[in-house]
Length: 252
Length: 253
Image (cartoon, rainbow over all chains, first blue to last red; front, side):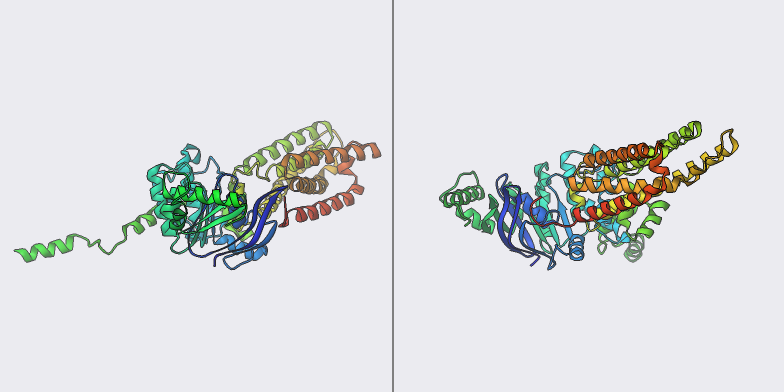
């Protein structure tokens, strides 16, 4: 398993953002769905080793992120797209991706090829030498995705990756996700259920810090067959599961 | 007739069916787009044993140019004041300026890609330490130059030679180390570069005023050798505090 979480919690003051989550994830694409404030971003930040848990155990890529050397090894094999991607406006697309490739300790001799491959995979070849300050929001998001995949990660964490992408780009991105998920563990946090349906082999639904559902997109859609609100089967499943978990007050 | 034509066709056209054109293009793009590193970055990468660290040191926009400019301005102005008035004011200014420089080179408020940087194997603490050393090194070189110029000018001037000016590098490096370390400790503990800078400048002002009033000499904070031990103690304590504050914590933040 590339991700093993055992009853992890994360608190910010009195607010418990992630509450006793246990999860095991192997290769494939896992979509993490949930309303705003469900704890998705906090969960991804912990998986990205940016944020340590308040309690519980995390193992990533069979390593313990609490140990300095093992955390470093995890980070070499990790790709992370934060919800709010900060960038250096004066950098070009290639400079930005190259910078993070070097910080990820990709061997310097392999960096140019890795950067070119990443740029082409997100279809930014025409903008390779453009300064980041000149790019649209959707293009910046693709730059963020390119830096996340530049080291061919075994664990790829994407927080709201399709925000700002137009429909055509989103279709292309879903294909990229499916491709990446064949060899790596990809975790995608989103609130767009159509992304999950099209690209994810599994889905976890979070609410108030808990995982209230885990299964395939088809299983989630099945939960909403006679209940739920929404235009599409997945949306109905999403709302039905949330409604049921809030009524019962416990994680399903 | 047909045979020669076929041979001509075989000789004149390439069979591209076995070539992955996408791969070829990526190889070409890699060569076209690659950024050729300069000699300074190559040396830094060799010294630091990390190409990533060298790139972080030399290309992060918040780092290089502002520090170089501010340091050059401070020492230039200080040197002129020193030459004109005989007061080594530059020694008094340097620690505060360096402290502010380091404090503002650290933290999520300064680095727009902070969140991303925190997930990298090249640790932020290492980047921070390297940047601090870089500031000291740059300031030491410029300080030495200013000292030499000051000494040379005073040798040829009407005023007596200011021997203390020769030791300016040692005189300000020690308090600067202490104040910078204190600034770092406060900035890291408070998670605020502004808080660190404020604490550093405040501590330095207090040291200057206290040693000045105790000895009756305005520049005692940098000229009185009895202050060296307290500076060392502050530097060590602050370094320990930084190490403690930047350890990986479990629990709430």
